[in-house]
Length: 249
Image (cartoon, rainbow, N blue to C red; front, top):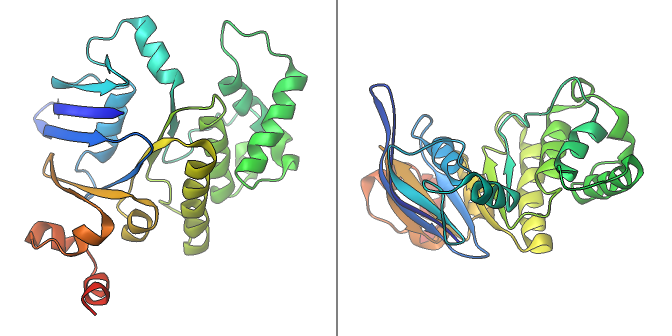
């Protein structure tokens, strides 16, 4: 379980998070909606300790991230897979080498052969042919780079997956493919996921619940069906009229 408690974060004079309270239940996929610049990515980075809160805390499996020791923080990070918006692959490394970084740590004596075999399996999971193993990120399409980023995120078999705008910059076909991949990995791995997105199609497709982050606070947290019926004008602004009409019909 991941729980955000009264989380505040500012950057100079910009107050991004203004007391976020949000609980992500074990095994669910939570879609986190909100306008650009409202702090969605900032929020999930606190779950890994990539940012320190000005006030409040994040609790992951009973561990306080704000007060975690370096050892506890490493333990939490091993439980979380983070899928960056731009994949964040190392351009100077091949796909195999990018995956290798996530497959090993200082306590493991993994051979290149075993890592390569496991890397091929990871690529199969994200529907990529193992022939891309020796390619560099610059040789891949945007959709392929996203999938390699996903493969790297699941390499250490995480309990949690944090998706940062996974469909941004993709055409509709590749965006649909990523949505299907999110749901498939949730079924295969049994992970708890937070999907940061401004794409309503993705939110309604993958989310067991949808949370709307607005002006630094959580405005609503509901199932897709419930949020369609929400009368709050701010919430309704983020729900397409066609979806509301379909639900009423």
